Amino acid sequence: MDFVTKFANSAWNFISTPFLQISGTQISVFSLILAITLFYVFYYCSNLSEKFMRKFLREKDIDPGVKRSIERFVKYLTLIIGILITLDTIGISMQSLAALGAILMVGIGFGLQNITSNFISGLIILFERPIKVGDIVKVGDVSGKVEDIGARATIVHTRDDVAIIVPNSKFVADEVVNESFSGQRIRLNIQVGVAYGTDASVVREELLDIAKKHKQVLSHPGPTVLFQDFADSALIFELRIWVDELWTYDLILSDIRYAINEQFKQKQIQIPFPQLDIHTK
Image 1 (tube, one colour):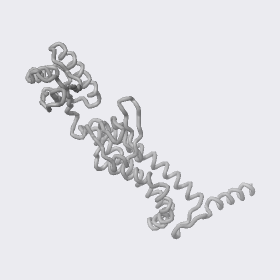
Image 2 (image 1 turned 180 degrees about the vertical axis):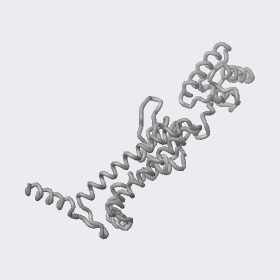
Image 3 (image 1 turned 45 degrees about the horizontal axis):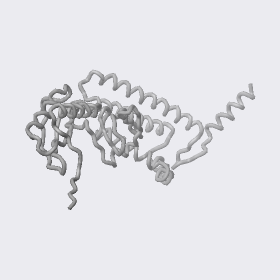
Image 4 (image 1 turned 60 degrees about the vertical axis):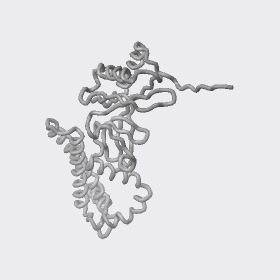
């Protein structure tokens, strides 16, 4: 029995004896175990708070991207409060944190620079909302639908069914094209050239007829045709249409081009290819 008591006292002395002191705050093995336990509890609570907000906002008439931002904000807020409570419980004050920050400043500056930048960029995205979950975006060479905005990176799902993890700093520092920013409607342009001598009014009517026959082309605003230019080998027309399908509009463009090619053949409207006439003397 004495052996057990001595062993317990020795173990307690080992885990309770401070091995580090920061601005008067003594850090021991026990305080570290307590801090890790509390952090895990608050991390679990932050996930619960996110799930609770998801259920609470499920039936609300709010934009899905706004809902996701609120859910993430509540999670991060709970986690930050938990971290502060954990540090306060083991006796680490804000002054101690400042001292620790001074010690780690060099390491953060060199080793954690990208992580810190991406985390802050993630907060900026959640607050300013230049992009949100469900948006169709293009950043650099990556184009697709935003699936998730995390603390460090954003997951973009491409039209090739590939998930690409993009650092959040890309969406803050680089030029980003957000096709969904103003809604789910977009204007598409299709250029086509016809041979010189073709009746321009006939071309216009045929292009409008093709656009109006396609079920995914909007009637309000309706399609328009512009006589764009006199090119070297062709008269250039541009068909402008509006659609409300951002994810598969490339298929709509393909359908329209197929229809133009077929209908121009039937109407004997020639689509010329570039050519150069050389006269020798």
